Image (tube, rainbow, N blue to C red; front, side, top):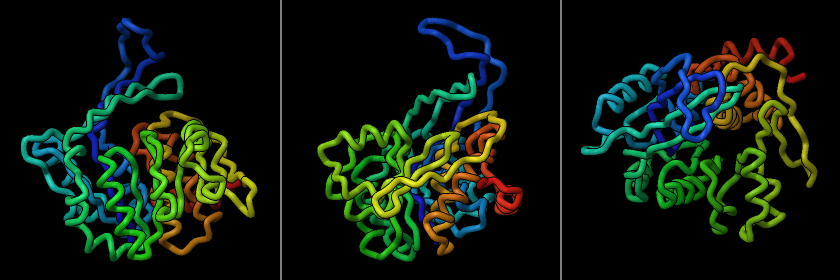
Amino acid sequence: MIIVVGSLNMDLVTSVERFPKKGETLTGTSFATIFGGKGANQAVAAARVEREVHMVGRVGDDPFGQEYLQYLSKEGLKTENVEPVTHQVTGTASITVAEQDNTIVIVPGANESMTADEVEASREVIERSDVVIVQLEIPIPAVERAIEIAKASGAIVILNPAPYQEIPSEWWEKIDYVTPNEHEAAEMRKSTEFSPDYESKLIVTMGGSGASYCVNGERKLVAAPKVEVKDTTGAGDTFNGVLGAGLDQGFSLEEAIRQAVAAASLSVTKFGAQTGMPTKEELDEFLKRGASS
């Protein structure tokens, strides 16, 4: 069983031919509201490949929040630990998609109401989990409590350090895997809190190149298959969710990463963060066609 403790946002996505310059107004080509937030994205990615997933988070007491709870239930997620927060709006992410890339501005909203005590209230379900996935789009004390509960119960703990902040030194011994992108990994290695011993915990996502991980002190690359890129939004979240799903199934780290890389590659061939995430059937078929080569 997988627990994801994290954010839920409504993504407000605008597509445009190129990114606007400072002070410039452009005419976009499309607009859509899409369910997002790094926490929910990763939870949906894991659920799509048919794992039992419980989401722990907060939405606003507004139409976006109501829609989100209904949507997660339809996706098969357990939402007993996602509560609407009175007098708060659901978090939003304003995303501009252009030039096969994206920019994102986040307004946390109800996500900011997640406290250590709120996570503590979900202790029972966290303690029953096999894998716990956390990110940094909710307040740090809430993330820390989730890590502490998960570590004490023997779960595999995955931290996706985004949006990037320096990881407290006391977290490192409690986390099994940290999944930065290349830029985040570079910042992390510069930190005085980072020890060379932590390198073995880093699984570094590298966009279209794939992902690297440590084997006997050396970096090994799991290459990504070549695909036609339509939208990179949510690719990293797809990677994290499917990585957690693979470890939940007892796969080796290499196999879990291979599946995660393939799923992330598939996700960028469709528009939207969660809408592009593959089902188990789609992922299995993709892998059979030689996606890992």
